[in-house]
Image (cartoon, rainbow, N blue to C red):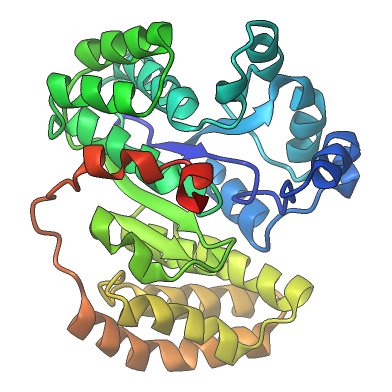
Length: 340
């Protein structure tokens, strides 16, 4: 069976990064790996995905010059990855491409399509079509770019529409050529299972309804773990380990853990399945060893069956996707355009 692919952004998705001012940028650039802060639960979930044989690929807007520090940070967190792509900002500056320094559409879309073209090629150890889960945040254009990429690969955005989006998105002509070339070369299919958008800026989840039920806006990584469990991408023990981190290191109690599930349930992102698997897994774990934060995990698990009823009643059935009007949205994909 082909290995599942997880593509992760770093800044504000995995790392708690500040870059709203020049001072923030400078501080981030000179931080030692051990000074960089990881979003609660992110490292545990990423390690658990690797343990579940998911292939991890980093695609970050951080500059290439930060590679060593970022790689060292991930190593400190015990994370393994299969590829690591950073933005060539120095090259952009030397070529006077100042617009590209902040642009995400012209950076991430061609990178995703290029990576997809490579993932489509079967190997002896990894034959077939590999599906993907994407992780980003609400600070930049991840929801737009990831959704556009998903619908291009699925064949719901045709070549002429994509070309017009590239022009309207102010991509440089050679970047447009790369996008169109890879879009023609990739194998079509329903490749992207989920798009997770970390609500770093506390954006209202309803802001993302336009992208359909495939996109999950989430507040903490336990919520992402609940969805991945139902999708069959991580086992129950992975969810429990994320919950343990939130309890032990970030002072979540059992009620807060359960509310994380309930929030997703009310928004229609959970089917209400596998809560029994979580309880059984916890029982076996607690039988064999002392579980950190066991009392709070027990409180969470006591409440999940009732919350699962809410999930089953609110589940947004996965109807055939209907893509948004990407051309109408393209002017808003860049935060600077939105501010204007």
